Amino acid sequence: MGDGPRLGIVTGHRAPDLSEGGKRVAAALSDRGFRVDPVLWTDESVEWSEYAAALVRSCWDYHADVERFRALIGELERADVAVCNPLAAIR
Image (cartoon, rainbow, N blue to C red; front, top):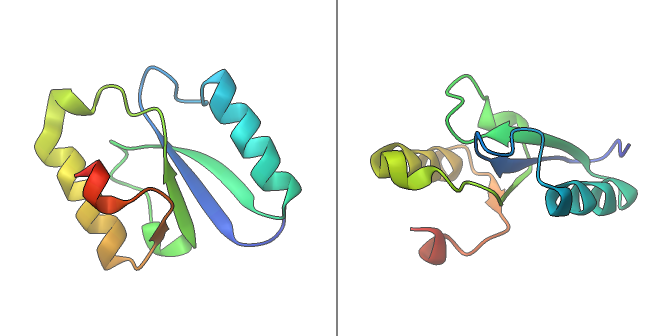
């Protein structure tokens, strides 16, 4: 496991421990020195300021609470987390 910058892979309830593809991405990032955590997008206890970056992946249930999902994007911006996905596309 990496010991460098912390990266949160943002996921949903259908893949809380990451999908198979997400696990491969996490392993590749870890091999490159990142400390990788799966993070549920609905988890309001997450301290985004502890993360250097976020990668939005398997948030398949975002449509059930679009406003909360938009709020998450705002939280990432306020915490100055580098988001790997283009924010315009996520919005």
